[in-house]
View 1 (cartoon, rainbow, N blue to C red):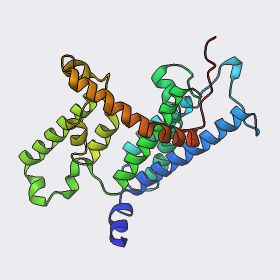
View 2 (cartoon, helix red, strand yellow):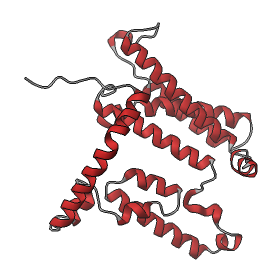
View 3 (tube, rainbow, N blue to C red):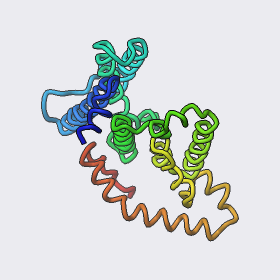
View 4 (cartoon, rainbow, N blue to C red):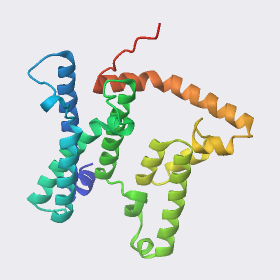
Length: 250
């Protein structure tokens, strides 16, 4: 355990990544706490609305992300400058992804059901960051021997095969599996060989005349959502706050 910690967490050059991840998580949690206090009318915090224009925190988040990103590229992976730029980038990314749903829908859906998408993206981004810090290299290049790394044909073949699995998983509507599959070798294979989700591009094109496959895909998606929907919604509400209740039309 100690060897793994020193090799993966304390490895030279990974400190900026660790600081970026920590500042990203801290910024998201603080931002959600403040927005929930504003929503409840507690504390000294208020929305920033100069001249009646509501300034969302994604605006300073974009500025900080750009500044921190360009600064990190210019400063390299070592030194105090790289650490400062990593913190700035993490803060900006936390502010931006906290309002990811607003960018996706181009509407103020922060406290709606669609706003839960921001929590999903933040959890996914944090998970990917932890995988990289924990020693997972894209497509498992770190697990190759020196001879395999010099074998360009083998490396390119591995890249193409894994990329094909990622692409098929995306076409089948399994974005989370595909994104994790970019970092962890052949995870996307499970998403590629299983049935596509209803409504995905793959289901519309390939299941159009396969009624049995379309029915099995719908049944599997229904069972999966029924099993995990309530748990995932409770987790998202615990982190990001419950969405506003919409009164049904009379």
